[in-house]
Amino acid sequence: MRCELLQSAAFIRAARRFLKKHPEATEDLRATLQQLSDDAFHPRLKTHKLRGELAGSWAASAGYDVRIVFELVQHQGAEAILLQSIGTHDEVY
Image (cartoon, rainbow, N blue to C red):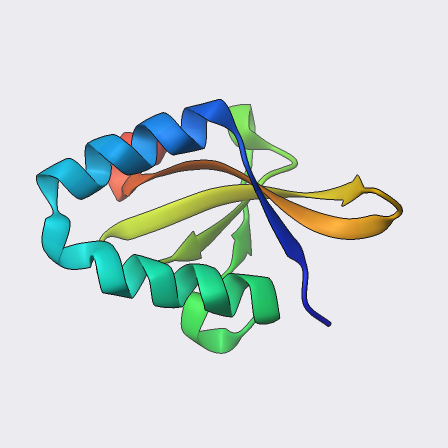
């Protein structure tokens, strides 16, 4: 089942910053977001729950050191994915 991707303002800012530093990652990011929408728990994404300050959120791998932080939410009566942040491991955690 395909989930709608909702982008928070923080995610949009972080994605712009990230892609400005790493323009070569654009296609990988696009493919990862497509996979996240299709199946957020696909093994390739290495999706895992977060703890601490980010408890309630999930992280997915978008490359060797790139993570996408998101939350599963209800939107218009269906499950959706709220994208919260993107960046390197150290940037998002």
